[in-house]
Amino acid sequence: MKEHEVVIVEAVRTPFSRFDGAMRDIPSVRLGAMVIKEVIQRTGILPEEIEETYYGSCIPAEVALEFDVPGRQATLLAGMPPEAYSFSLDRACCSSMTTLRLGYRSIKSGDADVALSVGSENMSRTPFLAKGIRWGNKIGPIQLQDPLFELGYGNSGFNPVAVDAGEVALEYGVDREMQDEWGLLSQERCAECYKKGNIKVGEELMAVEVPQRKGPPIVVTHDESPRETSLEKLAKLPTVYGSPTVTAGNAPPINAGATAILLMSAEKAKEKGLKPLATVVGCKEIAMSPRLIASVPAYAIKKVLNAAKLDLDDMQLIEINEAFAAMPLVSTKILSDGDPKKWRELQEKTNVNGGAVAIGHPVGASGGRITMTMMYELRRRGGGYGVAAVCGGLAQGSATIIKV
Image (tube, rainbow, N blue to C red; front, side, top):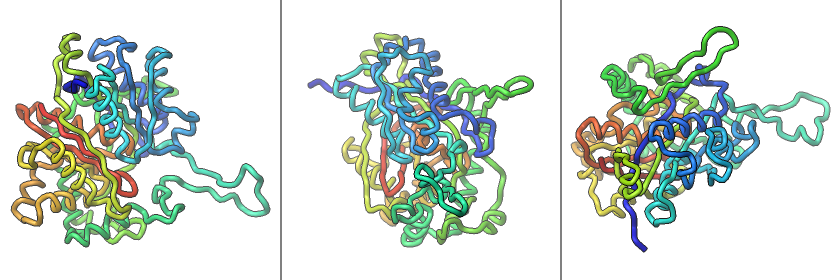
């Protein structure tokens, strides 16, 4: 079977809204529909030309407010025909990079020519759960459960991910101060990126109109979470969930947002007259012992580099999702093989526009976000290779290499 070259012809995301921000009441399926509409409008393709849509999310309690099959709902709300195929999945924070891999594999094998990778989340809408109420409640108060608290992993006997990340970070010699320094660096890099106009509507971003009961709609054109801080302020923050190092300052906020990446075979893109933004070189996924979540991105990167027969030095840029500041620090240390100079060099080209600590982390959408952020930055720099990696709950991992 002939293998086909897979290219990205469009990539867009909504701004990432704060937990209490302007987009807090928009269902995630509606956010997903917005980015689907935007890539269709930008490329001018017909909705029926998209053969497969892979849709990722990872807060099922929020999706449950619209029942289920969020991918099916989002495609229909976006105006795609009822015959359009969609596939919804939950692979924790890896979800929207897994959707990219599924679309890539389908086109690579020749099974499709056009595929759409979508990720969407609105953590702000996550409802409280009333366990056991269906069968009645005896005397006493009703107990509500917040699915966002520790992300619920404790219900199955697992540690909160903040605990695992903090403990593993210390085992690699990455202490609280280093994580705070990275958290501050993420904010500073993001602020500089916005100052230069590198994250903007019409490229990585689309504008989102939020209707109001009175007056004109609010138009959201930028990420709402970036903030000014200092090491002194970060040092005063308490750790969370019993973690030895993770705080609200070296961890990402809770967000709403969506991403969409339109993939085509190179032949189809040429036929449609669409100039590729990047070529997808390879996608790989892994899973490890659940507590090793902070180190997963490193091993996902190693796996995809090995499959592509490329070296880390071939990569002009690296993106490692800041599920916590511990992740890029631990993973780049592993990739440096303990060489302090190499470790510093890797940090300098990792998350150069800031990461999730500043930009935000609507969990099901972050894999798509880091991929497109890296792609647009590579284009500004004149091209080259980049590798993006993301960890997911209980130590899952995904990594993607692109070439611009």
